Length: 113
Length: 115
Image (cartoon, rainbow over the protein chains, first blue to last red):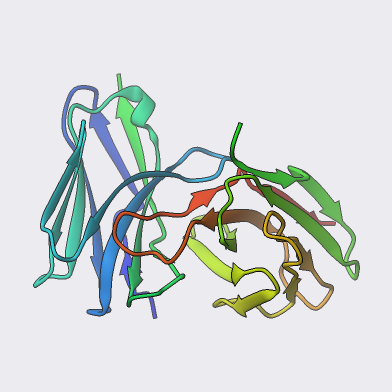
């Protein structure tokens, strides 16, 4: 039973355009969400996070939106750059004192110059 | 530099052998984790440790063992009981629980191939 779903395995976007990566979750107890970026054969690096008390968090070119009623979050990258090409993982945590992150399967973003 | 160091980067193991992956952090983090990634899959939690001399099973602990004798170190042993050990293994750490404003940091990963 997959609690965090990234239904698009891959996404291609032209350089300079907006990239939108989507993530759905099924567990309403999740209250903290994170996005990680991963290059091949490297560890994931943290990008941006959002708490369930917010619906938007922005950091430079990256914005995460959270729609709790739809159990959906999205990562917007504007403008997209070739260096953004990587696999992006959505992750969720729940409950005060939790140490566990539940990851989606990832979306491979390709930014075309 | 502060960070998480995993070794070796690449490891080959014969079937039936145990192998230990090393993970060291100098971030002064209390919590440490081991994740496994398979091609086309997300990261799955094997074990985690909140504090020295304590650790908890994750979602896929069978066939693995860990120890946490020092705050800085969290080695993972892949035993011969692990049926499908070939994967990319990631060690991670965090200062405390995963509440807003906190995150976990990953090492560079170790590739284990069973031959």
